[in-house]
Structure formats: C-alpha cells, structure tokens
Length: 204
Ligand SMILES: Nc1nc2c(ncn2[C@@H]2O[C@H](COP(=O)(O)OP(=O)(O)OP(=O)(O)O)[C@@H](O)[C@H]2O)c(=O)[nH]1
Ligand SMILES: [Mg+2]
Picture 1 (cartoon, helix red, strand yellow):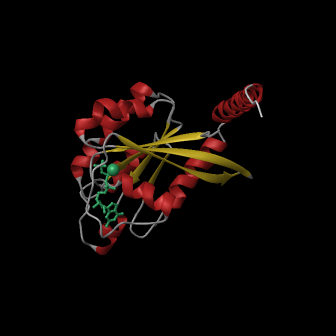
Picture 2: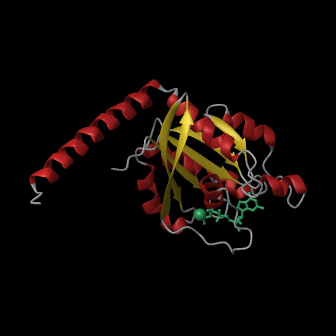
Picture 3: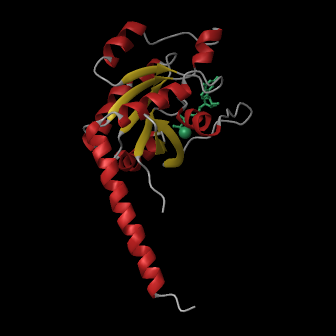
C-alpha cells in the first residue's frame, strides 16, 4: 500500500520553473532541448528521502501556474505540510503575484511551512537576464517564512538543499511527526485488515 509521509506543494506563476524544479529533484534531469509545456491542473511525483536517520516518502504536487486552472489547483494545497512558492528574480510580475499565492495557500492550509524559491539562477549568474526583484525586499519578506533558496534546475544548484531543508524541518516538527506516526499506524491496520479479508476470499 502506498503512503506519503510529507506532502509538498509547488505554487507560482506560469513559466517560473516549477515543473523543471521537480524534474531536476526527482529525475536529476533538465530538459533543455524540449519546448516549454505548461502543466495542466497538477502533476504528482514521489521520492524517498532521509532525515535524522529515518526514511520518509515525500509526495510532491506540482500545480499549474496558469490562471485558467486556478479554481482546481487550490484543492491540491489541502493537507500540505510544506509549500514552495516559486518566482523568477528577473520577472517582477512573478514576485508581485507571490502574495496572491501565499494568500490562496493560507485559506486552505493555515499552518503549512512556506519556502520561497527564486528560480533560474544560472540565467542571473551568466548575465543573460537582469534582476528586477530587489534582494532587500526578498530578505524582508522571507523573514516570516520558513526559508528562501535560489535554485537552478539547469545546473541543479541548491535544488537538493531546498528539499532536504523541507524534509529536515518536517522531521523536526513534533506535530507533523505525530501526524506521520498516526498515519503509519492507520495504514498498518488497514493493510492487516485487507490481508485478512483477502484470505477469507481465497478458495485455492
Ligand atoms: N535556464 C533555465 N531555464 C529554466 C530553469 N527552470 C526552468 N527553465 C525554463 O523555463 C521554462 C518554464 O519552465 P517550467 O518548469 O515548465 O515552468 P512552470 O512553472 O512549471 O510553468 P507552468 O506549468 O505553466 O506553471 C521552460 O522553458 C524551462 O526550460 C532554470 O533553472 N534555468
Ligand atoms: Mg509546470
């Protein structure tokens, strides 16, 4: 039976690089050659991670940034332990919209840990784009949140670090871990009941 210990949801305007971030993290890959394809609704993937000597199954929901899907993407926020809100430092509009994403999230999951992620660091580093979002504003805004990372899905820089920090924070959170333990006990019970029932119906 599958289970997911920590649920992470990705939010942010379209084209900021959410799907690329997930693909880099899960598959260690960046699809430089393939044209941009917007996510429809949301996509799910999972990965096992370690923290504090334990294994955790991480479920990641990569939501669509397009306004078109907003009514449905909100339902993916439910039950999230952590959210990564992405923006592009070279795109002021993606930063301005960030407040909206945070509000949307808070209406569904008040206590969810929030991490800001500035994407496409390689483009800033190479000078291919210029920063439009002032660093001091980001620093001030991040203070009330759980963290801020600058990542590049192209080079992989800081991608693992971002997800590891989330898992470490969740693993260190007593109320999240209580929830995880309860879920594991519940699943074990359901699995045992399912096996017992299957035996009843076995005629071989
Ligand atoms: N150079 C560079 N390009 C990136 C990076 N991350 C994403 N991109 C490019 O940015 C474009 C958009 O990336 P996506 O990951 O599809 O964006 P998204 O946020 O999932 O978009 P929606 O699904 O529409 O919400 C693609 O052409 C990617 O190749 C990065 O770290 N570096
Ligand atoms: Mg996408």
